[in-house]
Length: 128
Image 1 (cartoon, rainbow, N blue to C red):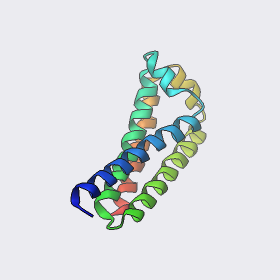
Image 2: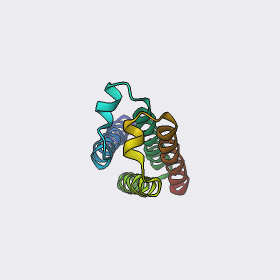
Image 3: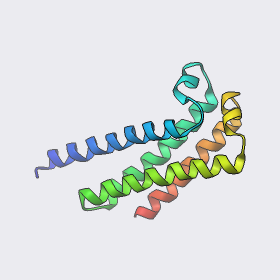
């Protein structure tokens, strides 16, 4: 396959993985991030932004460290599962995320975003 086609295939797949993750993640959370962000809720933006960055780092590592296209897609799908599971576990342990995010508690939103980014970095390192 010519290099430009391989690039376009990997880029398109990576973007599709991030978009798919966005859809899955926003359906799993008990609040509507997009609506809250449109209303100016910074806590929701910090939480969602950190989560997207955490997932994207793993997708980037999958692109760099896998030689096979299907292996890259597999790692991306597995990273999606890990990120969603981390959110579920973290919010269960913290027992107050919905109220805190909806109340625009920036510290709590930052904490959720940082947890997701941290797991994403660990996930990315594990791929390599």
